[in-house]
Length: 481
Ligand code: SIN
Image (tube, rainbow, N blue to C red):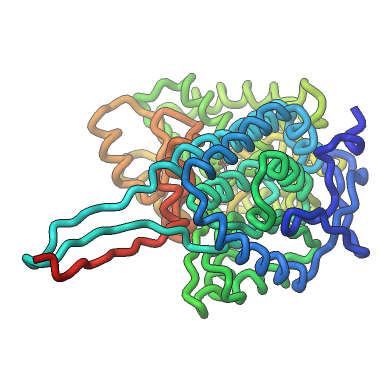
């Protein structure tokens, strides 16, 4: 299939319902073989300002649509995404590298947020509170915050967009989105489908740009933008938060993680190995919720490592478009070098590589199992963001809780065990926004995704996800005599 002749292959920016050409473009390449996929419009700060102005104008009308009308258009967008799953997934794999089956999964996952929030649009309820004085009545309503600036990452080029844009639009906000410069094609394809679904001009705008800095600068300093929603690194999240503070903008941040994966001796080891494989090797290890540190209770260490090794050895590395592939390429050279350096540091301090441990041709890294890892190593403090399973051992529950919480991050965590009381104790003690209990897969549209500590704040998905796009207003009614 020649993707360039497909209607979803778009290379212009999308502002105020129009496809905007730029003389200057930037190239998008396939991480599998570095081949050129597209030259995409390189917008500047002025374009971003223009998009914000248009989103601001559109907000005046969109926010006054009935919830039912907004919901219908969102539903249509959802249906169009499902009808175009194959093309959306192919584009995604081409620009991001993940195996096609995972890309299909991501597109469906992304679409599920649109369906969910199409429904939630109709449930933005207020309150009636008993008055504090005889002649007083109190009512509470929720209103859309206004124009939202959304900045999304390359690791989930489709789902991270819908997870922000759908609740924003459902709430009555309008959006200016800056997708990752590495993966803008999925975003533009979603814009094409949004246009077909019937969103009015200016409601959903996409600014594509090679240099994210001036775009981030405009989004965070323009007074018409009332909220910033960002998924990406903790370092950039802190910068955006700092910039947004000057105007006290509302901010949601979904940042880095350092997920512990704990296996207690009473666990179902086969199930734990399965869970570990999913949570570690999904997207070549490039997700914020990927397992970063595997803690094994001493007595089950050998059994778990043996079983995990056998599974890792079966992983096929290759082109995401090839159906036999389990692990695609990494996103770029610096991601590969980072993982090489993490392993160098770990082995120099006593860690032992059991499987893999080397980079392969191009941007591939061999699925790796490294044991005897300890907290003095860089690999225990940094997000690996690659296909490296790092194994630690522990003796007691108390010890492993301390180890697991010994990080600035607090996004996802996982543990396996059967003791009912311990499950409660551990789940409560883990300082994380999300806990997978006997499960390595926790992502779903119906649950609140988000972190604590330096992993950010705000929740995406579920009934909580729309709250970040709403202001609460209370009205005090007097003179009721
Ligand atoms: C992420 O890596 O930030 C998103 C992962 C997910 O939603 O499963």
